[in-house]
Figure (cartoon, rainbow, N blue to C red):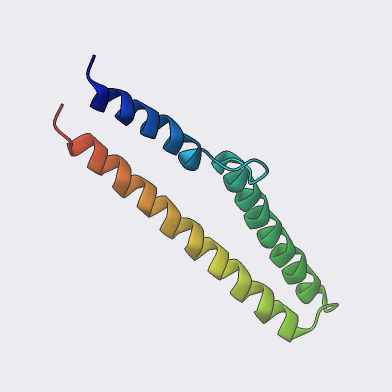
Length: 96
């Protein structure tokens, strides 16, 4: 039996817990769900503010602020989507 391969297996087993996610940090899926919920909430708040502004119940400054927040949220989602599409296309270009 080769002793070097035994040492390599032991070192690999010792380093493996360092690559596992820490407990309590949440999965990536949870982060995406939370981000999607925040996005939907931001758009709903902007819509409510816009409706109040049309009726005359909201401050014009609040409307501008809500529109700016919704614009930033949409731009962020579009940028993330573009990165996902770009990564997917890169995977498709990989040779099999």
